[in-house]
Each structure stands twice: as C-alpha cells, then as structure tokens.
Image 1 (cartoon, rainbow, N blue to C red):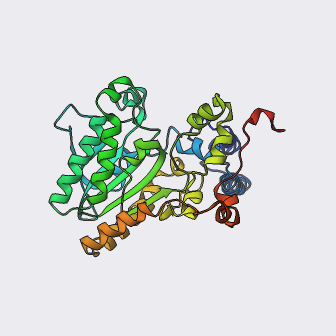
Image 2: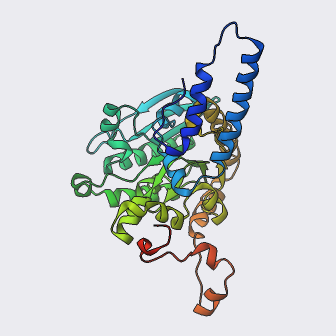
Image 3: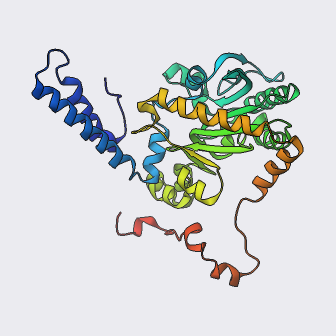
Length: 345
C-alpha cells in the first residue's frame, strides 16, 4: 500500500501509487502489464521532478514525515547486537535520547541518537524527541564509557530542539548541552554525527560535535526552527516558509558553506519510501568513516576536530572588506522586515 502522507506536494505521487495498487496483479493481459510499466516509469519521473525542486520549507516537511526512519529504526537496520544503556546516574532515564553498545559489521561502537517515536504513546514517552538535561548527561556518560574502551561513537541527530519546559530549565538544560559540547570536543575517540531528520537548535548541537558531520539529503540543521524564527522576527508562524529560505539550513546549503562534510543521498521520494535502502547507504557511510578515523593518531584527530568547529563562520576586519566580499550576497541575503508587504502575500 502507498504510504499515507500529510505533505500536499506529494499528492500527485500518492494518486499515481494508488492507481498502481488498483491494477490487477494476477493473470493480467499484455495491455495491462504494459500500462503498469508505463505508470511505474511515470511515477519514477514524477518523484524525481518533485523532489529535485523542493523549497527549503518543503525539505523541513519531509524531515518531519511521520514514516521517516528514526534512530530506533536504524538500530534494527544498520547495527547488530544493540544493547541499550539507561540513565544518567543523577536524575533519571530520558527516552528522547537512546544510548547503547552496538556492532557495525563486527566493529564495536557506541550509538547515541534522538528518538521521537512513531505512535502517539511513543511520542509522548520520548517527549517528541526533545531531550531533558538528563538525556544529555546520559549521552556524555556513555560517550566517556566508549572512550574508556577505545570505541568509536556514532550520533544520530533528529530533534526540533531540547525540551523547553520549566522542569528542563530547573535542571540546567543549557549547562548540560554546553557540557556535552565541551566533552565531545575533547573526547579521545572517533565521533561521527549524522543529521537524519530535524537538526534543531542547541538540542541538536548537544550531540553534534564530531570529527565528521553528515546530513541525509532531506534533513535540515539550524540554530532555530523556521516557525521559531518567523515568530521572533515577524511575530507569527505564517511566514515560516520565508524564514526557511533566509536560514539556508538544508543539506546542500550547509555543504556549500562548509558546515557539514557529506550529504548522504536518500532513495527516490525520500527515506520514508525505502527505509532499507536508506539504511544501506547510511551503513556504508558510517563503515567507511569509522575505519578511516581509527587510522588517525588521536592527537591529530582532536586537533582537527577543534579546528573544524573554530573555523566556522565568516568575519571581516572592516566594513570596506565586507562590502567587497564576493560571497556576501549569497551568505547574508536581505530579508524583508515586513513580509506581509511583499507582492506574493
């Protein structure tokens, strides 16, 4: 059956998939078999056309697709012998962050990843992927355990942001994220981070400091969600699509800006249409990076990790130098102070 979808731009794809499902499967005439083949080719072309022209806001919608594979799914499809580790030995066990031992083609690794949940009950138990302070403290404790045994760490990022409630603030969520980033920057073991869906705000950065950082093709990685940006700048969520365009947070944007190292291509139509193929591509990337990083001397690895993040951003020594910079227009686009006044609203 075709996957149900809340995404309006996918409706033509769903309509064509439904037509294919309704075609006779057994004892079909040559004419029907020819029609099925024609529909399949048309479906592939339609997916390619739609997904090669997504706006940045539509990429956000794909990253939030209810059937998009999450950390728990990749634990089953990519790794062997996963053994979950619970708790931060201070407050409790945060289900929004999963940690545990696993094997990647025989290589022992520590996996840390956000988990949103698929069903309503799972999502409520996982706080919709928004971790509390104890989640980040749990992650740090397990990463240190991995470093103790000389094992690599793999982080899967998929969160709209850290949990914003009062209890989270009372238990020191900002301090927990800052400590996690600091500890990851000096952790004496290889770290590979992959944004598999949403990469929102400090909640994503809390497990995002690695030697290699990659993104799936239809994911985003940003200092703030488009809704949050729209609400702050224009006091309304209705301009979230304009905020998404201004933020430039898609995988292709961040690869061009040097924020990430690799874009992992998704199956035609997005990871939610073929989780197994997506898992295979992800596994190949992780396997290659882990083997390469394990050959790098630890001192050199830590120096490169620190330098990688310190080199982010663009700065100028004078206004004259800034005005003359060839990339200024592409890096710092002028956005309207009042988008409601633009011609397309």
